[in-house]
Amino acid sequence: MDHYDIIVIGCGAAGYNTAVRASQLGLSVACIERAQAIGGAGIRTGCIPSRLLLHASEMYEIAAKAKHATLGIRCVPTLDLSQMMRYKTKTVENMVRHATQLLGRHRVKVIPGTARLAGSGKVALTGPDGLSRIMSGRAVVIATGSEPIPLPFAAFNHHSILHSADALALDRVPRHLAIVGAGATGVELASLWRRLGARVTLLERRDRICHWLDRDIATALQRALRRQGIGIRLSADVVGIDTRTGGVSIHVCNAPTGEIATLDAEQVLVAIGRRPATVGLNLASAGLRAGVDGELPFRPSPCADGIWVVGDATDGPMLMSKAEEEAIACAEQIAGLPGFVNYATIPNVLYTSPEVAMIGKTEDELRATGVPYRIGYCPLAVSARATIHGTQTGSVKLIVDARTHLIAGAHLIGPRAAELISQVAIAVEASMICEDFARICHPYPTWSESVRQAAMAAGGWMMRT
Image 1 (tube, rainbow, N blue to C red):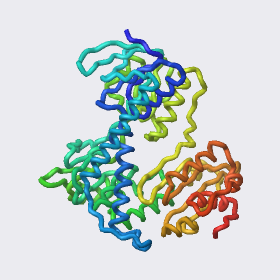
Image 2: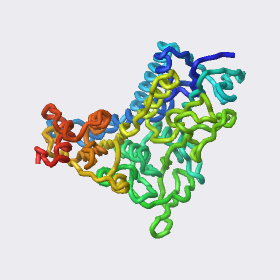
Image 3: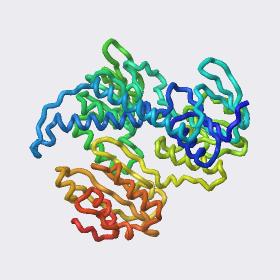
Image 4: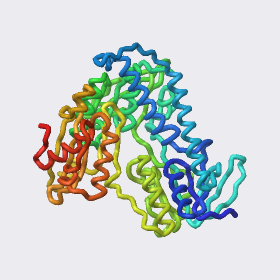
């Protein structure tokens, strides 16, 4: 029987980061992956390909709409979608190769096959050849990731009813793409395909898009998407989808009135969320029981000694950054170190145009708990860098706990939001009061000055207004 200190089931972001950190701490590690390549959804079918295509589509839109014409830069672009997709594929392959080499350098044994728990500290592995064997480990880490959730009445057919991975591999621009769900995946892929020329309609059953965002930011993003030509229908509950020659008919119930209307589209992307991929792991053999959505607890429970869960397989936001934090903490705790995850400092980002980034609490959350707070607000229009770039939209909103003067939340919309949010993450992690944050000198002219100005505004002394 093969024995390792740690057996990791799944070799996506959570799995390979657990393996690397455990190896750094001197533990022997085996990582089991059932897919043909490692990397998980994050590298192969999610974060990396979507960010790459979002970037490429933004470059195309800038050229197509002559957004640099005032700078004396003019061109007439031609869209070569097949080349764009080839570049995406090559980039993903390079990142998979890099991750494979990384595991090799850290002496992690990568084993192809399907794994099932076989009791405490044991894993049953079925290889590609169909042969099975039992492996044992001092600890077993479940890092099996997540999968798209289908509508209960319309299974994915990967042609007219798509999930996110399908929508990142289309061989032509849809004439009309309907998207069910205006969460992170929905709005990002709406941005992508609208830029490339598709008519796009977002269907959201709630009364606003991206319901977890601060209301002000969600409203600003919604306005921006509509200005870009993306149709948005709120309080629109999809109750049926019929496939037909050349497209789909989507039956939508208006929540306030109960009226049902039909929307015709060429393809429909179902982006209502993802669920932990924990089915088939034989959890009961180790005393584990999944939650309603298939999620497992991050820390091992007394009835499942030696079983750990990280990444999308556990609860919380499904982010590669969260997966990495949990992976590091998991490996360190198994090694006897005080590993931990500060969930309050994990940012969340939407790579739309404009970008959106947030960390910590929203106004609604603080109001619901009765926490007194004050707001520091800075529109990007006051930034010299925004003037240089010809950008008038966007803002930084800091929410400060009025009792402790600590930053309770930050909500950004505009250029470089994904990068700027890290400044706030550092301040929150360091328990820096807002006044101290406002005293940090920033270079001029930069986007990051806006974050400092918002901190000043929270103290009532913003300099650019």
